[in-house]
Length: 237
Image (tube, rainbow, N blue to C red; front, side, top):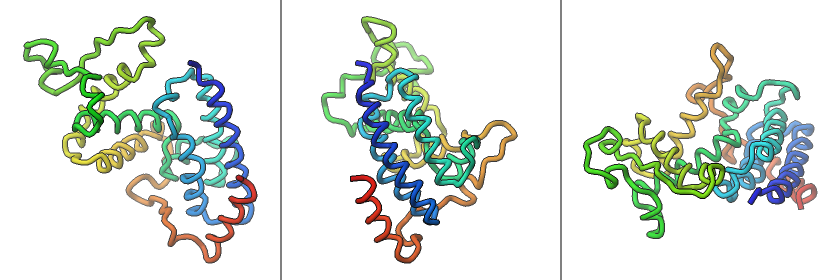
């Protein structure tokens, strides 16, 4: 399955959301409100079923990457040629690739903590269960990467393969063992991903700790709640 039809339809929906955000930006809508709309209308659709179609071909995913960069530049009031890495960090937004990585990582965290349905109990195999040798991977509780597949391309895109690769990466993170809940891990891993959004010597905006943009409702300007709702009805539905 190529997911071409799904991604094409998703691109149309996201394009309409970009139109909403662009019009609101022209009306001097506060940045905090634009981020709220991005989260509720753009990112929510982008993340729906992402674990299933996120392994589609790079050419298909790039269509969504370009749309996401476009909306991020609009929210940040940047030029259409601006480097988006510092903008993603300033707005505290994960790019498409990292959203996919983040979802799989949270899924594997749930697997490791026994929070998934029983059907997934035998989906992944610990290294320590494949042999009796006292190896480093076995001691660290890592997963076995010996997954059988009919083709190399299909094997790389399988959740069983990506899940193993992802888990063996996140289990080495310093904060992993300190995270007792999925929410705690999700928050820490997002921070970890966003801190890598700057090139060497590049400007990174206000960063995670220094000046995170708040997006809760009380930061909206007076009267903007009704205006946003009205425009959402007109332009989106």
